[in-house]
Image (cartoon, rainbow, N blue to C red; front, side):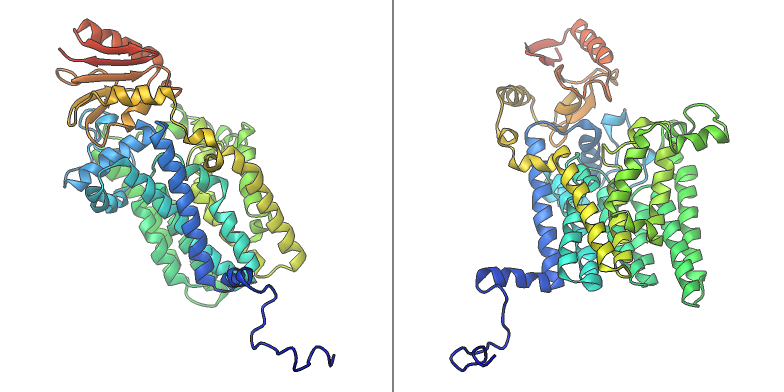
Length: 482
């Protein structure tokens, strides 16, 4: 003991267990803001890197990057969001209610490229890491905060969405992260204010706002306060959903209705029993529920915050559209901040053994799913190469002048929407027809939104109209109107 306290070995006022550079880096873990924003910046860079590179490789599509670019381009020039890719004169607010995307118009006006939308989505998605990491730091310390931040940023739902073109739910992900954090910290006003903008993101999220209001009311009763503010928010969410689905969307829709009703009833009138069976069948839905529960370390299912997943899960599982049932596409991104928030909420009250086990499960899910989603492309050399096919495609599209009218296949459309008026090649033209027709018959997405038969039929019709082929090789076809 005397040797340790000897004057020959002075004691520093703030000794570090790991001296030098490593100690300084580990010290970041003790600063919640630095840790949270550092992780967010890192994930934003990864998302943007993957998304921009996928666009460079021609993997983005008309559905949905092209559609949103046409809408935001219109907003940027003070016009209504009319989207030719959806049809002649199609007003996009007749499809989904997402006016919040107009906030990107000034940025797009300054940088008129689809890359602007991809980078904006990366920043928005990564922002969700910040409140959840800081809350975890407050609840359980720096190591848990680091694990939670990584679990959020690398979660399968967010990673899939961040690399999948652009979608309006990019705004919902951070808003939900802040709202869930506010609920967990028992800050009802902040939770309400963070959730209200969800009404402008997409029509179904009004139900999630209603769920936030219900939880605020429940917390108020627990704390012996008036539940009236929470109930008012719940009513506002339900009313907003009804207003958008029954009035606003039909008023802009060319058919005068809401296009997605048939995806709930399957075009018929299923019985109550059949609708209930849809919640659990086919088994692909079990995978969705299992991965969501595992993302919350299973422990998060004990939190009332997990109930915020119910509205989104309900419409997805009840839908007759199989694209909504699984773990592909971007639909699960809004569930990730809720699942992670529910885990943090329970961690505050759990013992160390359960915390370690829950974090291990969540980390295992991330480790298993990460190679299945596009984020791993950052370290794949082949993802950064320029193939001869890509060179041929670029050369073909380079022949199309700016401001031209073009009928295009799905993937080629996303390469043209920033400088041309683009429609889908499989649809009959409006008026005299486009000046150019650009088709990639090797596009694996050629089945949707355009079936190959419809595409070939229209190509034949354009040829019969006298369109002259400038390029017709290796499945790449470029026709010019006479």
